[in-house]
Image 1 (cartoon, one colour):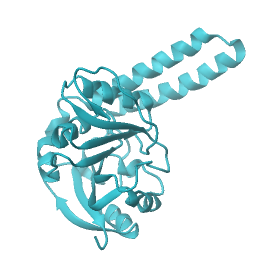
Image 2: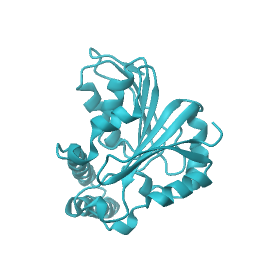
Image 3: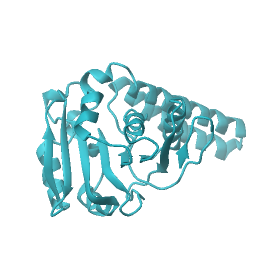
Length: 257
């Protein structure tokens, strides 16, 4: 749907697939996860025992507050120092009219940049598993006060729900290591690419170059493993960018394309 600044509302379209996964300091990450778990269990127990709607409302408000805190952390200004978004955008060479899927859009850190790059003549799909995150992204896009065309896809773990032949680029930043059964996943998502389409993967190095990512480094995926898995899924590494100090940046296309 195309959004223009004078309009203040727009639909959130269901579908999609990704995990909201960006690095955060250990304390914030653990606090967010533990809070969501504790409040979910406590809230369910309280409702079962007492049926009190006020407790359910308090649970949801606290959960939303923690997610918002996490998202605001993802947009912290110092992220630009290592993420180098201007250089990433230059490397991607997006043009007006293109269609981009931001898989695991999180706070919309790159979604906002994609909207500007492809303009409202193109289209951006923001994809995440948390509806609050998609709401946050949409609100941040609205605050840019520029026309844009976007869909906000609520993710499922095993299916992106992207339309067939819908995008020129699937962009995955700091999310690859959270995906499960990755070979099968990327086999399935291939149909969403237009002819000549590509997949760009940015994620943290599996060694000391990544620095403090806020969780055990063994959860990361080595660059070589990414290439191996994407090759098994039917892709060929076309380009590699080495300007990011803490992350690899790889571009793949379907083999034979």
